[in-house]
Amino acid sequence: MLYKGVFGTLRLALGLALLGSVLWQVSDRISVGLFRPFEYFAYFSIDSSILAGLVLAIGGLTLLQGKDESARSHTWRLIATVNMIVVGVVYHLLLGDSAVDPRDIGYDWPRPPNLVIHTYAPILITVDYLLSIKGHKLKWRKALWVVAYPFAWLAFSLVRGILDGWWPYWFINPGEVGVIGMFSYVFAIAAAFIGLGFIVLGLRLVAIRVLSSG
Image (cartoon, rainbow, N blue to C red; front, top):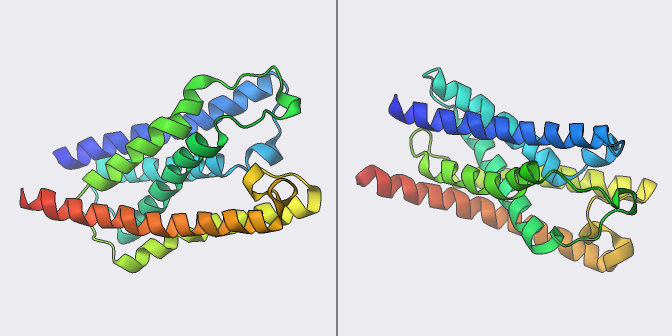
């Protein structure tokens, strides 16, 4: 019960923090008349935060009720973990100093939710996934599922960008990086997701073996 209490509380708190951060950003932008929902909810970081928030909150409640996680729940946690790792890494390496949308000049994002989404959540969800050693051991092929969501998001973003000219990120905008550059980034992102899926799953399996034998 201690195990379920600790990890259940952590997941529920982190899930609510992610969902609360999205709500905070939305309400703040609404308050200054800068909320553009069809753009805001098209960002990978926002969609991934909502997905991870729901997965964590549901998983946390499951453990706090004394129930065991299903294999499907473990797969969703792997997907959410890899998504959030990519969110954190891409933000700090590629997007932190990106130019501000001209329509948002003079507006400062509220700092706490931005830190939760791009820094704290990616770290904590990874720690939770690697150290929660009880439950199902996913088979290696489950790591391939981590590309399903980003592929769907990329397909939607590319079609939308072609139709209306708006792109959530500069590195998938052929107008900025060229068609070859765009596809280079797309393939690099896909490879990164697949690689991370196997790495994260592999590290968890190692953690299970080490911590279970200790």
